[in-house]
Image 1 (tube, each protein chain N blue to C red):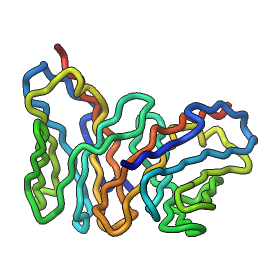
Image 2 (tube, chains in turn red, yellow):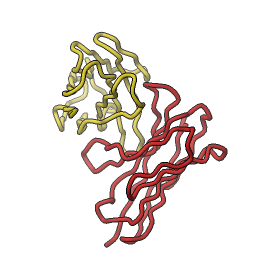
Image 3 (tube, rainbow over the protein chains, first blue to last red):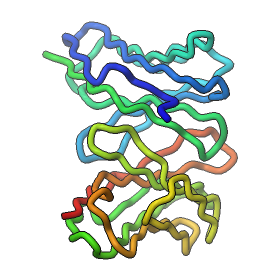
Amino acid sequence: DQQVKQNSPSLSVQEGRISILNCDYTNSMFDYFLWYKKYPAEGPTFLISISSIKDKNEDGRFTVFLNKSAKHLSLHIVPSQPGDSAVYFCAASQRANDMRFGAGTRLTVKP
Amino acid sequence: SQTIHQWPATLVQPVGSPLSLECTVEGTSNPNLYWYRQAAGRGLQLLFYSVGIGQISSEVPQNLSASRPQDRQFILSSKKLLLSDSGFYLCAWRRQGASETQYFGPGTRLLVL
């Protein structure tokens, strides 16, 4: 079952603009959420996380927003850079050792 | 700092042949270790995890198995590969008792022909 969904397989934005990647989940017991970035033929790299007690976490150009009532998570990248072009995975966890991943969104940032 | 290694990076194997993928972690002790598979166009599927030497939990029944012979070594095996075993295999680690963030290795691309 797909407990974590990324409904947009791809997203294209212009350099300097905002990129917004979305993620929905179905399990209300999830209490920790993460975003990973993945380049082809490489392992995912941890980007940013948020626990369910917060609704926003910011790290430089990256901000993650959590809307628990809507079971929705989003990642904002401002400003977007060509080097941000990658596949972004959303992940959620309700207990240690049980992390569920979305199918990923391919972000392309055009110069 | 911690480093996670996987090898081989790429592997092409015939159907029915055995498999052994290795993962090692440096710079930490007693990590939680994980094996994931990413099939083409899909998300990451958790296959196995381990909280200590000799302790393996299986998430998905299949013809794969995992072993943890040493604290920082995690091995993924199969006695007979199937075509459907093709994919990108990722090892990850997490510091026990810390946040739930997992850190991934570079991955092994397996093609079963």
